[in-house]
Image (cartoon, rainbow, N blue to C red; front, side):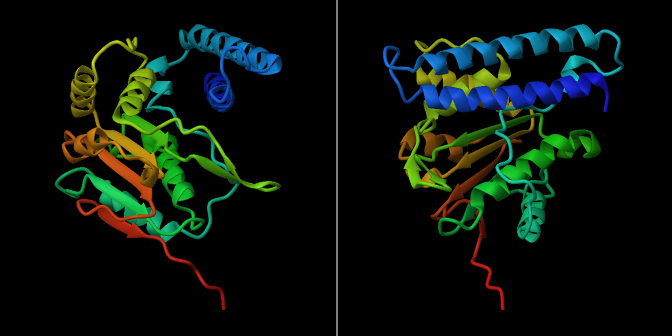
Length: 259
C-alpha cells in the first residue's frame, strides 16, 4: 500500500470517528454539551485538516491524482463487524439488481424483514465493496457517489440493551443536505427545499449514484417518497426496512435455522 493510500485510510477513519462524535454532540444544546466532547471534536477536526494537507502535499509525486484516490465520494460509516458471514447469496443478488440499465431496470431495492436479521449489515457491506473495488469494476458498473443515511432512532448495545439515539435522517431536506455535504458544495439552509431537490436531481442525473437509506420505516415524509418515485437515471437506491415497498425489487431476509 502506498503512503498516499495509507494517509487516505487514516483520513477515512478520522472522518468516521468525527461523525460519531457529531452524533453524540447533536444530543446536547450549545450550553449543555460536555467540555470533553468539545475538545474531542476540535482535536478530530484538526487531525482531519492536517491529514488532508498531507495528502495534497503527497499527491504531487504520485501517478494517481487526489480525485482518483478519493473515488468514489462517500460518507460510509465503518463496518460494525470484523467479518461478513451468512448473507453472501443475498449480497450477490443485490449486485445483480444494481447493474446498470439495460442489464437491470430496477432502481429501488428493499432489504426487508424483521429486526435483528442483518439488514443494515448487508446494505453496509454492499456499499463498502463498491467503494473498495471501484477500480476493479467495469466503468459502467462503478458508483461515483455513495451516500449512506440512517433513520435509526435506537441502537442495540451489549450492556444496556436497546438505547435511544438521535435520528439524523428523517426528511428529504436531510437527504439533500447530506448529498451537498459529501459533494463538498457550500450549503445555505435558507435555500428552499424545492431548489435543493432540483439541484440534487440534476447532480444524480450526471453520475451513477448509490443511495442507501437505512431503517426507512421510521421516516414519514411525503416529499421524500415523491423524490424516490421520480429518481433520475442512473441512480440506484437500497432501502432497509421492516416493510415492503410496492414499486421496489424485494430481497427478504428470513431467519436461518441451524439443525
